[in-house]
Image (cartoon, rainbow, N blue to C red; front, side):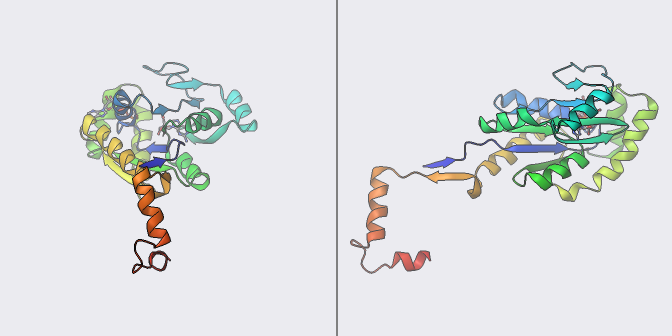
Length: 227
Ligand code: ADP
Ligand code: 5GP
């Protein structure tokens, strides 16, 4: 039997605004209640569909800057004129409890995490096409025309950064994309460097001992083979 490390996995999910990150994460969480989506702080105004304390903690710029001074963020960045940051303490706590933690953050913040937490899994979400991205941004109906344009232009720059991520998912169908997140996490959980211990049952333990003592297998030089 294999025992994996108790520590949860940290998963960063990025992609251009409107590509569907939030939607596929919510779809993924429906079937993964033990994964935890970090709640970021932001200085942007609340918009349609936002729930304070659930989608974001809404702070003024001054309050946000005070939190920066207190080193309360694992990372933070400015995006489209507003601050966004990941509160540090809840992440540590959830990972230590063994929960997988999802961060839905933009690229500058993701790259900061890449520098400090090397085991993090980085997933980039792409829209099926730029035409579809524009349609989704407009269809969401949460930003005015000017802001949509800004986000759309920025999408071209963001897509250039895809090679800095470990995995890429095209969000054509919500369920399929959520299933791919599941597939990535399943594979990552099986990585040899996430194994804490290999546990043998009594019979297997006996065979192991005999092999090492070489009493029963005098012709096999196991130690030589291992080294
Ligand atoms: P993001 O979190 O990346 O900014 P959202 O999750 O808010 O994007 O999605 C933007 C819009 O696109 C929403 O209106 C959402 O319902 C829609 N959407 C998301 N995924 C798909 C999809 N696979 N097919 C069609 N529409 C989608
Ligand atoms: P929105 O205003 O659409 O909610 O988010 C704008 C961008 O900010 C998105 O790309 C989103 O992923 C990113 N974002 C949300 N929270 C954080 C955060 O805590 N840190 C960083 N760096 N980006 C974030």
